[in-house]
Each structure stands twice: as structure tokens, then as C-alpha cells.
Length: 101
Image 1 (cartoon, rainbow, N blue to C red):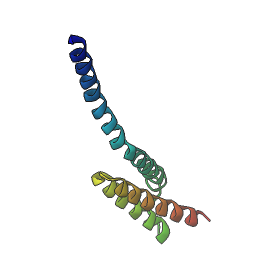
Image 2: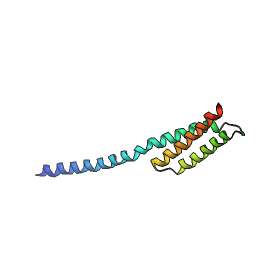
Image 3: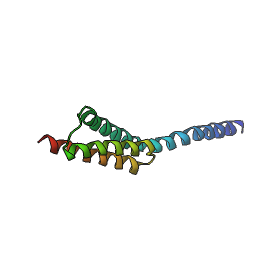
Image 4: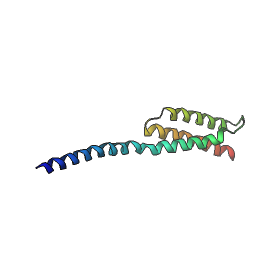
């Protein structure tokens, strides 16, 4: 009868260890969006930080997108907020591409 209590205790401890591990795995699924958004922000920053002041409105808008995305990233907590920041960066990168033509 003692072995039943031992097996029950082991199962209870095992389940107690697995639940937090499984829950944390679900929380970090949004980490991919955060990484992608920050990568796009860095990529856009490589273009706009080195540009001299210009009269081209597309380059100025790209700088604005970079600043705006940085603000969104600073307060982003959800997947949707990270996706928004990435979309803003992609708009800025598209503006850079148009200006280079």
C-alpha cells in the first residue's frame, strides 16, 4: 500500500513540473513576432540612420516609419503589436526601395 502513495506523489510532482513548462512554451510562441519586428526595425535603421538630410519626401517618410515603429516596439506586448511594428517597418523599407530607383 505504501508504493501507491509513493507512485501518487511522483505523478503529482511530475505533473506539477510539467504544467509550468508547457504554459511557458505557449507564452513564448509570440517571441517569433518580436524577433521579426526588431529585425525589420534594425534593417530599416541601417538605411535611415546614415542618410544625410534630404528633400526627398519618401526618405523622410521612411525615417518617420522607423521612429514610429521604434515607439510601437518600445511598448509592444502582444503578437498584434509586434506585427504592427513589422508592417510599419516594411512600409519604410518599401519607401527606401522606391527612392533608390
